[in-house]
Amino acid sequence: MREKMLYLSARNRGPEEDVEEEARTEGMIRILMERFDIDLLEFCRSGRNTQLRPDPALRIHAVTPAPRPHMILSNSLNKLRGSAFHTETDKDLQAEIRRLCKSNAYTHVFITRNLPGSCIDLLSSLLPDAVIITDAQRQESRQAESKAAGKRGLSRRYHMLNAVLSRRDERRLMNKTGLLLTASEWEALSFKALSFADAGKVHVIPQFIDLDDYAYDDPAIKEDAVLLHWNMHTSQGRDAALTFYKKIYPLVKEKVPHCKCYIVAREIHPEVAALAKLDSSVIVVDGGDAYEYIRRSKAVIASMREGCGGQRRILEAWALRTPVVTGVKSAEGLTCEPGRNILLAGTTGEIADQVLKLLQTPELGAIIADQAYRTLLKHYEAGNVKAKVLSLV
Image (cartoon, rainbow, N blue to C red; front, side, top):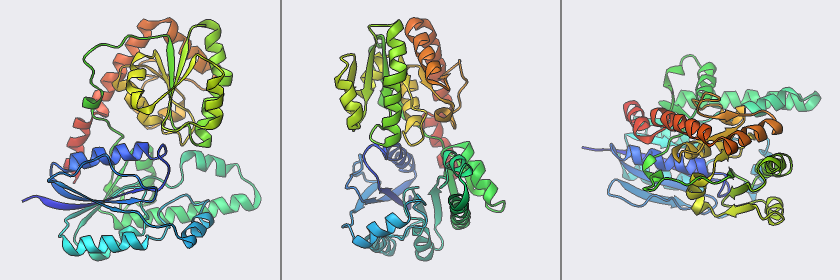
């Protein structure tokens, strides 16, 4: 007899910002449906609906709360602690969790990283015998930690206090969960360092993709084109795009005058859109056509800035056999070898040099793309990840 799982997912941000989380959630559910009958409870603060369709093994429930003034005030006060853990669980979500737990005998509960950490307290009390699985991420990223280290005076003391409180929340999360999953080795090691007693609960499930979604019958015809593909609706994404357009693209065009630049985004920042209109070689592409343009480009550039959703974009380029140029920070957490399956750069000049290599030496791009595809098959393909997930749960 199949066991039952309650799967809690949330969307708290804009359409671009949740792309990686959406894909991870939907991929994870497809894997778990092989073993469990799943009730998917989505907390949709921004009104998004899952791409998954109802199935005999999947029932979908949604909670979309009405805005409340006190929630807006609370979010403002907690802005500097950008974590869901300390946020109070919405009353509508609480009520739906209670209803589902009362009506079903769940053996497992899966909580995604965007949900309030207080959900775990409620679920522990309602389902004391269930295995709670948390797909977690560190509240303080490495970039945030490095910024805090440079603060002085009262600001430094505030950031130090914030870090202490975040570690306390994370230790509490580790204590209450039965299995804690992370997307990178760095996050896994960071969690393990917080609690030796709970370190055995921590396992890495990397970002993964299903290669069936990237299959084409005909080979791609490569153009002298580069492609920018990241979240350009945020300030980080905007800044990365403007830096490329103003400092890197002119260096590329100087050597390859007929080069084109494709920009793919669900939403594009007005400043980036305005610049694109001034140059006929810069073409804004609808997100639905992204794969075809990745295939035809000779290089995909993944943003080096945090918060741009670059890692999944790298995997998509690998799946479509297009070489990637990015920075060390964007490649962190990926199994990659510079110069073998990816090209890394630290400055605008280095990015331009790496892009020119790929534009002017097509055989180099083909070799790097082939090695990247092999890496993807070994570490990030859904079939391989599925075996690990099912062995853990």
